[in-house]
Amino acid sequence: YPSISRENDSAEAQIFKKEYRKINKILPSTYATRGFDVTFDTMMRLLQGKNYQETADSFATEQVDNKFEYYKKPDGGYTNKGIYILYYDTDLTIKEAE
Image (tube, rainbow, N blue to C red):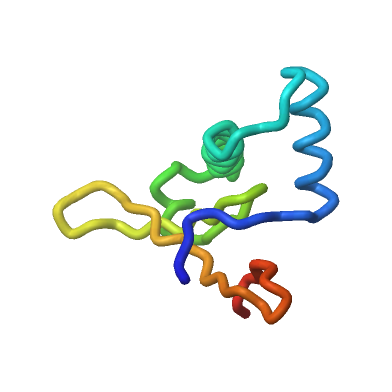
């Protein structure tokens, strides 16, 4: 099934959750993680030495729980088509299709 976010148990994701909890005394919600991912993606793109539109046209990124793959809409602006295809494994854990 398609999803805009995924469960991420990588070392980087664990560091993010640990640091977030240390500062905020609570684990990050889906919205907090999404906000972090959007902000981090934007800052990364702005530091590439190109304008934002060039980076949006050039490459996709993956952050803690979200993927960003922008494409230019014919009527102007950009939309994110970065999604994950997930499935339930035989042990009922959610996995990312590859």
